[in-house]
Length: 250
Ligand code: GLP
Image (cartoon, rainbow, N blue to C red):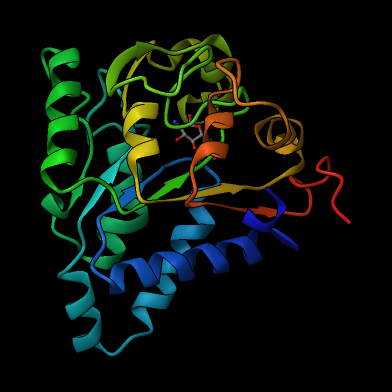
């Protein structure tokens, strides 16, 4: 596992490394799987800086190839709600880079039938040929996307109930009130995530040290959905020193 793990000094150094991978994938016209969350904010800022530093013609050429699918969205929230993942994508990538809205796909949190929307979304990913590079953050309870524990390795894209732990973890975006966090979300499943050709798990901060240890060092199991990632031959983990503190690295 250690050969698949890259440890950087801090979150900024992690962001620079991850942005470079994303830049390469974009240049190779790959289908991108994107994530939201605090971990991704410096990553997307670094990526935007790299892209905005290019000559305008070259930048336009690269951005024209952009095709991405986000992992998840809250049920009941749309772009007009600043806590939605669609609004997150607008703030951090779509607006700064001037992307066309159709280039950045997410599940529709306002769909009348969320379960049907999950099926539609899975089919849209499949129709694009699947995801080439899937970017992933790590939930404090071991979730990836919103695949809450317990979760097997073949769970499909679906609408599900969020755990109390996750609603606590994400309360900041809702004025600090866990009760204000939607109860349901639509997420790509472990099935679609593990079908991606390459996986890039990004973990920063000391609060993730214990869950990263369980993700990497325990046998793959339903109690830690991220532990299934170990079985993927194209997994790469980029972590900062604080997050890697319990991995007993030399
Ligand atoms: C959220 C998202 C995940 C994200 C994770 C970590 O709930 N559904 O896609 O990667 O939890 O979030 P953060 O980076 O804010 O710690």
